Length: 178
Image (tube, rainbow, N blue to C red):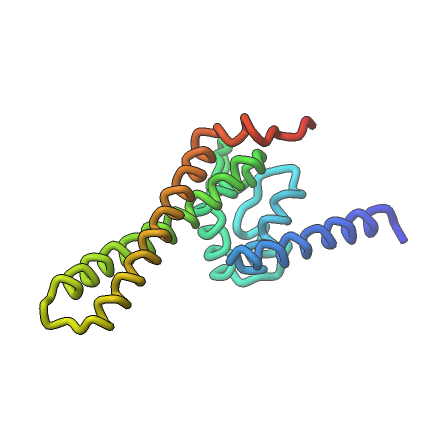
């Protein structure tokens, strides 16, 4: 087996592992393979180059790039004289981790908190309504307690996310030295 074949096979092993693991985080395997390709590339790549290398459709490639851009895992770069868009991965994996979880968690927290706060208002109205049965009132009070506990958890989670954004978390869990 040629040296170059071994190199390609070892890279493909890592690319496949990245694709499978990213799938666990809701990122499609094709976007994971694209990320892996960019990881091993020693130069910025165009959509056409990525499409050719991975054998993906231009649409799939474009969707995958958009996903990775939205998650701040990839960035567009400019090179003088190049007319096509070029892409590279963001090299700071710590920051990619922070960005990914900040984006995903804030979205989930906002959606869940908003719904729970609306529910709390409706439950309080139900409790205040003299026509509400005692059993329903008791169940509503139990639900309010559960929702308030969850909202406290979301406050804690927001503090954790804040520590990612400010990098304060790194005061407690240090980066590994290269």
